[in-house]
Amino acid sequence: MAFERIFVEKSIAERPATLAVLKKINALDRFEIIEKYDDYFGRVKKPYLHKRNQLNLYLAEKKGQLVKEAPDAYGLAGAPHFYFVHAYNCIYECEYCYLQGYFNSPDIVLFTNHDEISKEIIRHIHQYPNQEIWFHAGEFSDSLALSQISGELELYHQLFKKFPHARLELRTKSANTKVLESLDPLDNMITSFSMSPQSSVKKYDHKTAALKLRLKAMEKLSMLGHPVAIHLDPIIWSPNWESDYQELVHKITETINPDNIRYVSIGVVRFPKKMFKDIKNNYPDSDLVHQPLITTTNDLVRYRKPLRFKILNTVESMLKTAGFKAPQIYKCME
Image (cartoon, rainbow, N blue to C red; front, side):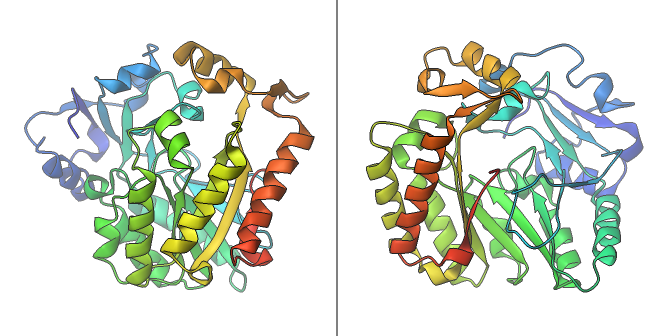
């Protein structure tokens, strides 16, 4: 990954984690020291599509609330769910990605104070000493796409090895599993792959791993003993959506036994109203602009409830017919 300019916050410039990142990208002699990343990142609006040929990198210290409570229906029911932020923005370019309307810049920010984030995770774990508790990575950036340079997976692997009742989920559209392959499998460290029919991947998921590569990566991790899961989200309506998803479910079960998949989430495409305006500006010719969508009373752009639940229930039925059990399946953000 080549970055045009690299900025490093002064407070973390000498930390081993920061120097390790700079070394991996051959940038030990070509970075600029700044006081605070947010004095530069997003201060002047940079068009989202600049990410196609011009990305800067910021190495910074994550401040403020390091671990946040996840929204309802974010994960499996019956346990508290939290997420932590290891990075801002993504090298991929999905047309439906909410990040295009979230920051004023598509530039990448990698946070390197994982020791502090880890302490906050442990503090939350201690609040639930006798209860399963979940932590999710990948809310603001793909969990694996840059893992070979960001270097945090080893640290979180060590952390969750000490707390078997806590769960860590790594959400990804990548096939970059090299770091995970070098680690011992942990029953409570789950890699979840977002999957769509290849026609949707080609149409909307620019620069991401192709479906067959995601399936191969999932198969490889599973064979090595690493727990895996799947997100069928976002499901985007098309005239052939039923046959496309029937074929996708078949490909999944051809690749891996449903018993070896921890869970499958299913969710339909949805956007905040402001973000949908950004999609129209960035991708005026996209099929997403012409979907049968409405704006709800809480300013969410989504399908009407009958269509939404027809899609969700149909895909759930496909999964059950293919061998998945009801407790493995949950509807995301519903």
